[in-house]
Amino acid sequence: MVSDIKKQIVQRLTRDMLDLQLLRFIDAEPTWGYRIKKSVEADLGIKLRHGALYPTLNAMEREGLVESQRQPQSGRARKVYSLTPKGRNLLDAYYAVLKEQLKNKAH
Image: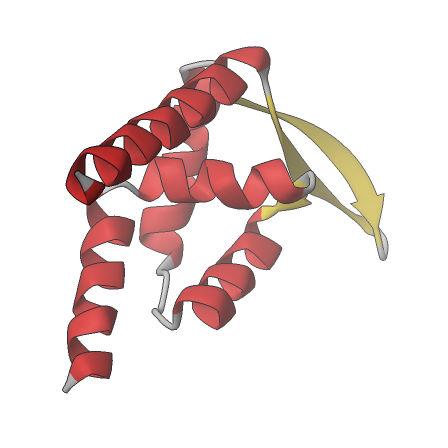
């Protein structure tokens, strides 16, 4: 029962705040789409569709939250994403809001 509720919360967070979740994964290390997809699935226990992932990454790049570089890998190029200063600011603000909310709930 508790695991079902936990999974529902993770799914809502991922669906409603996918960009922030992706920034968290990219912040850990510059990475590419397929690796993000597999990390989200392994770490959060939910299936992330390509149809949600890549449009979100593209929008984040257009907004200046991430930047990408093409890197050759096994005879083909893949896009490796990294955080920009704007993406770092958004992620820091997200963590500050979470910290504030948790602090307020403790009182």
